[in-house]
Length: 208
Image 1 (cartoon, one colour):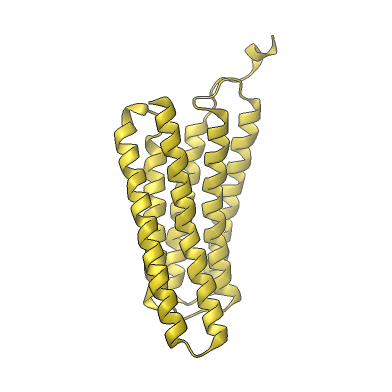
Image 2 (cartoon, one colour):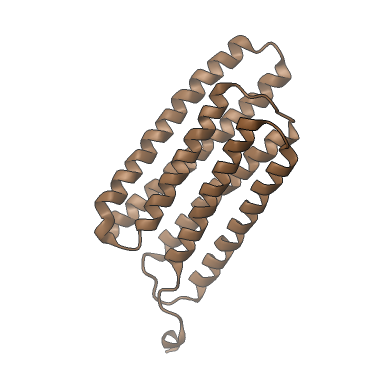
């Protein structure tokens, strides 16, 4: 009886796109922070502000979900997708904070390469999310998700090689611990991008 008074669909795809844009913005800021190694506090604060904007979008999406009677895709898919996208942004912010807290100003090329892969992954997430509102885009979306899987595998290889070099060549235990933690956070960003890709693939399979 009361369902007729509840909103239908809602602006979920618009919210996904807004959040995905912040993911890309955050990843680029993180890569710039790692490339320069200067002004760490200001740069980390900027990433933090981006993450807080993402949190607000996540909360608004979940609140709208509770108020919406008919959704464009499965309710659980909406919740999982926005939550996993938020995890990406959380890890980006954590990585930036690590750089500031550990006062890491000089990074090996491996760390910068991992940060660049994170940017590529996040851009692919944004591309896939932008197409999700129409299942006419199913083939393109699935191809983008495969690109994300490939990038995540590349990040795995880069991190394993980086860890090997780190344990062979770094004599300072404190630096080793710092860099290992940074590597692990960056690689985990790509893991969560892959998780988003898996959710999107499931949505396409269910709705195409």
